[in-house]
Length: 300
Image (cartoon, rainbow, N blue to C red; front, top):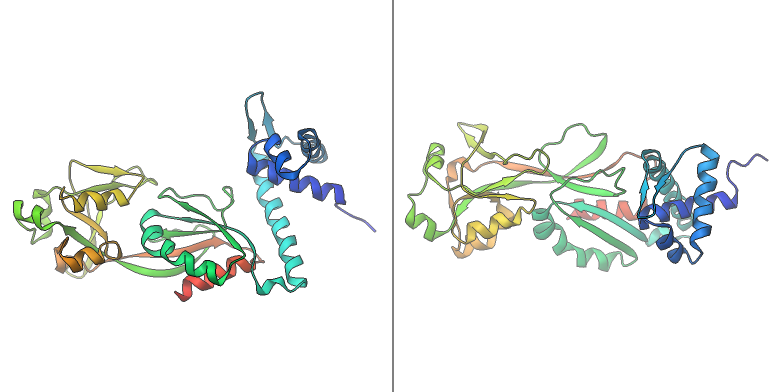
């Protein structure tokens, strides 16, 4: 019977994936409990089979090639499918196991996802989580993430998108700031105020504020002396310290609005929302750990 892979080749694929993840032959060897030379021979077998270089080797670093990165994605997916298949035929699919890698922006992580993790872990104790909290968008395919949470309207990315919620936006300031500066009553009044800005990592430009005017959604470029980069939550610290106005997700300031630490302004224009989605690759097969997380988040 023809066999495309033998046991040795399957083992080589596992060592190749481990080397990509550990970024060195030595680290992969320590994890696998073998010698670095054995790891190097495994990689060489794959390179010889296909006639391509998977890594660029120097005395100081090991860098994966474009071909290696592309091949890694398919190898990792195939090995995960094999592992999931073993769990299914042994009945372990009832208790999802394995590492789930999640990418999520800062505000949604701190105020929506992270508070739920204890409950999720109690329900699925055998799922390990690696949570990438950042406003920089990862590539789910090349960066080897299982799922991401993203805000705003989506372009056709070839990913499956499941809406989590439409998050309300509002403009807030401290009572002390509003004592020193007349409260804005109309959109054009924003020109007279210090508006805290956040630079979008995807564009390198300040995010416009989204407002509702005469039943239409409009986008306003505001002005201010302070622009925050990378960490959206830094804008919350600034607005709470009385620096100026900021448009924020209502779920990030609910407590402060209740206590009066922050006040909402321009209420007639604040009837806007921004959607948040679960994003994950389109595949014929979906692991039980990924299904568990998707169903949990949509159910919550």
